[in-house]
Image (cartoon, rainbow, N blue to C red):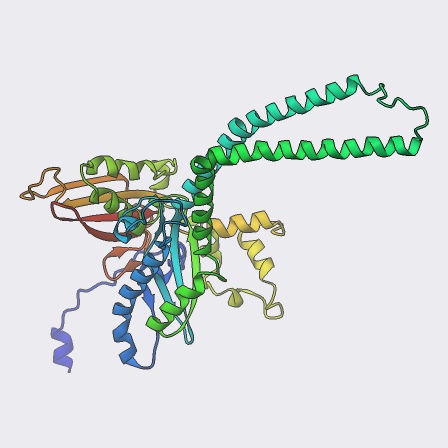
Length: 442
């Protein structure tokens, strides 16, 4: 043993790791489960998990066909011919729905859907436009003549209001008042008859042109709203999905203002536009980019390294559990701790509380959008060449991990947590094509 120790040469020196100013560092923001997996399920029976991918395909088909519902009989909308289902699905004025994000629990399935109700805006605008035409042009014009004619009758009566038509002096006051009342009632009846005649002219002359359109837009608007009603049409959808999933259904609708805020929606819209003939795919891609509004920020300041000495919360509180940071005798005073962390003397104002919570959410601002179109997109009948186009606006990089040297979460191995991806395929007369879309947040 002595010989072994003498011949052993140890030249290694301890290497100190790079020390951190704060033991905790910046808190990682973990996005929701649906950004990584469309379905989350926990079951004791492993055989039930085999049906989840197939059920997801069926659920998306049922939901999209449900929001494409239309009147089967053309008499309801006043049109001469019924609109075929294939043509109805190709409409651009409809309710766009993203793919379903399903969270399975023990007895129910919570379905989250992102929607853009473009049909509602168009129908409302058309209804108001026609209503203004009727009120401003037609009704005002006819009632102008009606008022003038009634005014002429009143003028004639006013001229002879002091003249008596009675020759005899033996007439009583009671008989005189009854006589005036009798002719007043006749005049009111004639006035109502004339008013009904005016309305009949308006209705008979403009029924086919205006009132049928008003009725059509009113019916379509009511059908559009009934699709989101929990008491009218949503139970029908729940019964269909219950047969597929086998659990109670609970919905979570998120209405978006623009199609550019969800990858599933704008890839679907772009595929519908490109499926039509003689349309330039580059112009349609630019129309999507024009709807994406990126916030104006200082890129140098945003991508600069973060000074960890300024992170007071991570330096002062080594443990992120709130209960461990509270005194022993005051386990329920979370508000005092939050006031101390955020350096606020008073958080009683609801607006300040809302702003504090909203500012803590990550990836809520759009950092960039990217579109890729590839396939048979030539305008000719020949399908010998495939077109390819790639456009982007902004960037998809994660600012925290790429520039600030802060750790971030990865999805499924290599997907960034701040970006979402979607793929939509479609067909044209020349051939098939695909649309890929990415959205990055910061």
